[in-house]
Structures are given as C-alpha cells and as structure tokens.
Image (cartoon, rainbow, N blue to C red; front, side):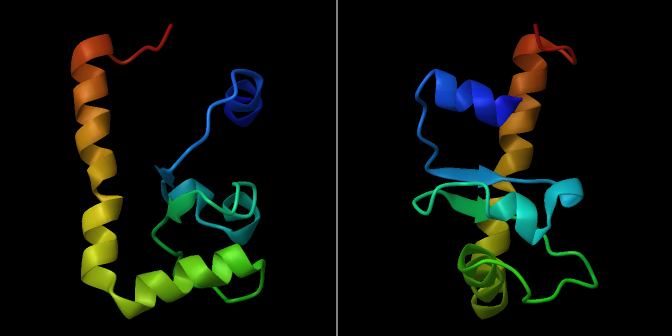
Length: 90
C-alpha cells in the first residue's frame, strides 16, 4: 500500500532501509533502479534474483562497515519519528 501511495503522489526515493522481514530479492526488485536499497541479508540468502538484488548483496559484502553505517541511519529516523508522532501514525 505504501508503494502505491508513493506512486500516486509522485515521490521518488533516493534510498530506503528495509528491516529483516523485507530482506528478500522480491522486495528489493520492487524499487526503481535509481533507488538504493539497504537491507541486512538473512542467514540463508542467495544470489538468486534480479540484478538489483545482486548489486545490493555485492555492496554489503564489499564494504560491510560503510554499508552498515548507512543502514543504521534507519534507527535514527525511527527514533525521531516516534518522538514527534508517537507510536501511531495517522
């Protein structure tokens, strides 16, 4: 539903950080080629999937420290959002 809403209001994403429930190739492939997707791969992750999935996995393996620094920006934005809006989103 969120993806449909973004298309409806014509918002282009530069990057997105997905939690562990969405760290699969099918979710990564749903984003435009210009959107950088950050995930923490599951233990049994493979390279089967789209080129975007393979590129994401390569980035994770090549420079893990820098990749994790980018991924954990997610926690900062979640904390600010919860302080401003509480646990519920209207």
